[in-house]
Image: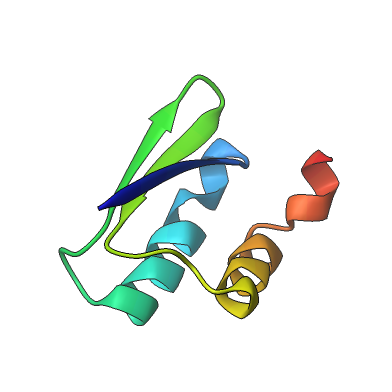
Length: 64
């Protein structure tokens, strides 16, 4: 399992969950809100396309 952090709003949690469940299936990921970031555990590395789609789902550019 791979863990990474994503800077996003607290309210973006459902969008992140929906994206990851669609991609990996139910009960295959874990998303935790920690210190203003989401700590995400997934079974494999995201491809560059998947990573871009995840960023788009939470409007990532807004946080840069």
